[in-house]
Length: 218
Ligand SMILES: *Cc1c(COP(=O)(O)O)cnc(C)c1O
Image (cartoon, rainbow, N blue to C red):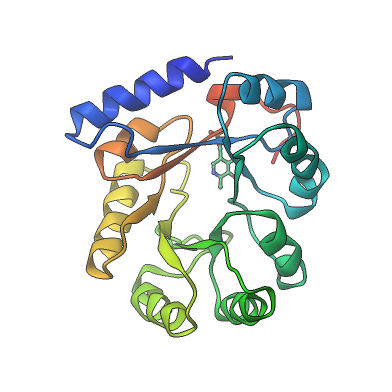
């Protein structure tokens, strides 16, 4: 388990980019990992985790929460509207808000529940047909719409195309966030979190570099 090593690489990247120490949140992405590995990271004192499926998150985190205080859970995968209520009851932050129908559903449920997780809007910076997210050209209007719905928009999220230089996508996301007055940038994974920090990431989503390779694909 190399949680310590990842934390020190984050600290080094923060210093290199003149970022405030501790300003980057490490989201340990625990999807598909065996519970023993997740438990080892909890025992090492880490409390911020990411999951990409509501069902899977619902199956493991309520139990962990009874045994460990201060767990913060981030949903980083696609969210169907019929799972939105369950997601809102379970997680502290949703990084995959990417369409009006979902934004409307979250706003309505927030009224019902009297609370709402922090929201990140996913931007499809590579304009890939198979990938979720609003197009860069539609991002400003979508941010405005989410704000009009009173959703707590904390920032933007992206997943760069695998075969492209991620820094171009991180820079584009940072630019869209800046012109919309958003501070949060959820970007950077195991292979590129240091580049993301150099370009302003506030939340890095790191899975396999902490937990080891996932046995099933996700
Ligand atoms: C799985 C996943 C990650 C973590 O990926 P690693 O390469 O294992 O660090 C980050 N973000 C999202 C959206 C994911 O689905």
